[in-house]
Length: 105
Image (cartoon, rainbow, N blue to C red):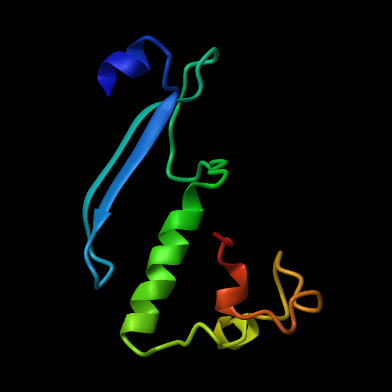
Protein backbone atom coordinates (compact mmCIF):
# COMPACT_ATOMS: atom_id res chain seq x y z
CA UNK A 1 0.00 0.00 0.00
CA UNK A 2 2.85 2.36 0.76
CA UNK A 3 3.85 2.83 -2.92
CA UNK A 4 0.27 3.87 -3.74
CA UNK A 5 0.17 6.22 -0.77
CA UNK A 6 3.54 7.76 -1.64
CA UNK A 7 2.52 8.30 -5.28
CA UNK A 8 -0.84 9.75 -4.12
CA UNK A 9 -2.76 7.20 -6.19
CA UNK A 10 -4.36 6.25 -2.88
CA UNK A 11 -4.92 9.06 -0.38
CA UNK A 12 -5.40 6.94 2.72
CA UNK A 13 -6.58 3.71 4.21
CA UNK A 14 -7.93 2.47 7.51
CA UNK A 15 -7.54 -1.26 8.21
CA UNK A 16 -9.31 -3.07 11.06
CA UNK A 17 -9.38 -6.79 11.87
CA UNK A 18 -11.90 -7.91 14.49
CA UNK A 19 -13.34 -11.24 15.60
CA UNK A 20 -16.99 -12.23 16.08
CA UNK A 21 -17.05 -10.90 19.62
CA UNK A 22 -16.00 -7.45 18.41
CA UNK A 23 -12.51 -7.62 19.87
CA UNK A 24 -10.12 -5.65 17.65
CA UNK A 25 -6.91 -7.51 16.83
CA UNK A 26 -5.38 -5.06 14.38
CA UNK A 27 -5.94 -1.39 13.61
CA UNK A 28 -3.84 0.83 11.38
CA UNK A 29 -4.28 4.18 9.67
CA UNK A 30 -2.10 5.19 6.73
CA UNK A 31 -2.03 8.19 4.45
CA UNK A 32 -3.90 11.48 4.47
CA UNK A 33 -7.45 12.77 4.63
CA UNK A 34 -6.18 15.87 2.83
CA UNK A 35 -3.15 15.16 0.65
CA UNK A 36 -2.36 18.81 -0.16
CA UNK A 37 -2.44 19.88 3.50
CA UNK A 38 -0.78 16.61 4.60
CA UNK A 39 -3.56 16.09 7.16
CA UNK A 40 -3.16 12.50 8.45
CA UNK A 41 -5.93 9.92 8.60
CA UNK A 42 -7.88 9.64 11.84
CA UNK A 43 -10.44 7.19 13.21
CA UNK A 44 -13.09 9.89 12.93
CA UNK A 45 -12.88 10.14 9.13
CA UNK A 46 -16.04 9.43 7.14
CA UNK A 47 -15.69 7.74 3.75
CA UNK A 48 -17.93 7.60 0.71
CA UNK A 49 -18.20 3.88 0.02
CA UNK A 50 -20.58 4.05 -2.94
CA UNK A 51 -21.88 0.57 -3.74
CA UNK A 52 -19.16 -1.34 -1.91
CA UNK A 53 -21.34 -1.99 1.14
CA UNK A 54 -24.02 -3.83 -0.87
CA UNK A 55 -22.05 -7.06 -1.11
CA UNK A 56 -21.29 -7.08 2.62
CA UNK A 57 -24.89 -6.34 3.61
CA UNK A 58 -26.16 -9.00 1.21
CA UNK A 59 -23.75 -11.62 2.52
CA UNK A 60 -24.57 -10.68 6.12
CA UNK A 61 -28.33 -10.95 5.53
CA UNK A 62 -27.89 -14.36 3.88
CA UNK A 63 -25.81 -15.54 6.86
CA UNK A 64 -28.69 -14.50 9.15
CA UNK A 65 -31.12 -16.38 6.89
CA UNK A 66 -28.94 -19.51 7.05
CA UNK A 67 -28.88 -19.23 10.87
CA UNK A 68 -32.67 -18.91 10.95
CA UNK A 69 -32.55 -15.45 12.55
CA UNK A 70 -34.43 -13.69 9.73
CA UNK A 71 -36.46 -14.69 6.71
CA UNK A 72 -36.21 -13.06 3.30
CA UNK A 73 -39.95 -12.49 3.60
CA UNK A 74 -39.60 -10.52 6.87
CA UNK A 75 -40.36 -6.82 6.54
CA UNK A 76 -37.28 -4.59 6.71
CA UNK A 77 -38.91 -2.60 9.48
CA UNK A 78 -38.91 -5.65 11.80
CA UNK A 79 -35.11 -5.87 11.79
CA UNK A 80 -34.35 -2.23 12.60
CA UNK A 81 -33.44 -1.34 16.16
CA UNK A 82 -34.31 2.29 15.50
CA UNK A 83 -36.99 2.49 12.85
CA UNK A 84 -38.25 5.98 13.71
CA UNK A 85 -35.01 7.90 13.55
CA UNK A 86 -32.33 7.99 10.89
CA UNK A 87 -31.80 8.32 7.17
CA UNK A 88 -34.13 5.53 6.06
CA UNK A 89 -37.65 6.55 5.14
CA UNK A 90 -39.76 3.85 6.78
CA UNK A 91 -43.03 5.25 5.46
CA UNK A 92 -41.97 4.67 1.86
CA UNK A 93 -40.68 1.16 2.56
CA UNK A 94 -43.36 0.01 4.98
CA UNK A 95 -44.15 -3.14 3.00
CA UNK A 96 -40.67 -3.94 1.70
CA UNK A 97 -39.00 -7.22 2.61
CA UNK A 98 -35.39 -8.35 2.32
CA UNK A 99 -36.23 -10.24 -0.88
CA UNK A 100 -37.60 -7.04 -2.48
CA UNK A 101 -34.10 -5.53 -2.28
CA UNK A 102 -32.38 -8.14 -4.41
CA UNK A 103 -31.41 -7.39 -7.98
CA UNK A 104 -33.45 -9.02 -10.70
CA UNK A 105 -31.48 -11.42 -12.94
